[in-house]
Image (cartoon, rainbow, N blue to C red; front, side, top):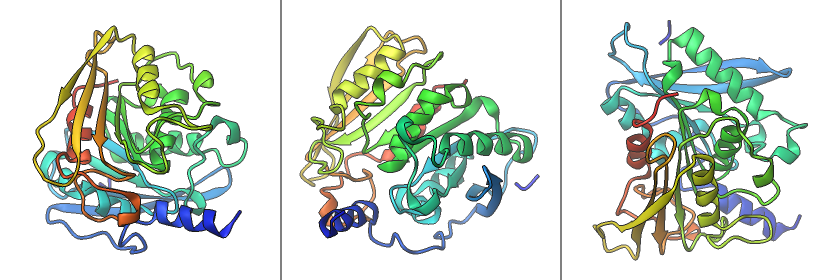
Length: 299
């Protein structure tokens, strides 16, 4: 087991390219090993990067986070951006980072007839469990930007395969919300900035407002209420963070929304961002929040 316009094009490039995003080699972290796996789905070769602890109990199936990159991203830069290798080292979780075809996840039910990334991720999870010994009850999925939209779509289509999801810098499309009718609910963590110029916090013609999307996930989880808590303002970076935690849900406190007031289209806790994407809060770490949330759930 081993272990349409040039302005639109420019905006897409800025959205998808934090500083260093075109590097291909993951930054080395002591105690963490990696390998790349390729396999075919629907006649297309797909690629996946695995990060795992160099020393681990071979008799204990590890939990795993499927971590999905942003538009035009790659697995290694996403790993570096999120600092997930350090999480692998410190917690023993595996990080599995698949690569989207042409850099774009097919994250809407409207376009599943093209590249079926739901099927790709389904096959990926199956291989991770059967070939690499990942614990099938503790598989989680999270993503940033386009990867976060893909995470939500997967939670709509194959919630039986993941114990919880996390979406950073995403909402739900108006067209997709009525089509998201899973038989079982997925606990969901959301992290959004109020000054996100791409995933608008208050919604637009395509996207639901972020708070409406959180309420939607809370409804699927049969939550009965919520409470808002202002977090400690640890850094003078122009942001403050509020946690909205939904309670009375079918699986405990299964939905959380972290609103970063003053925050942009960024991954909180990292400094590796283009200023054009807005302010990156240092009051919280999206990676740490994600893992703390995931650990509460098993499927």
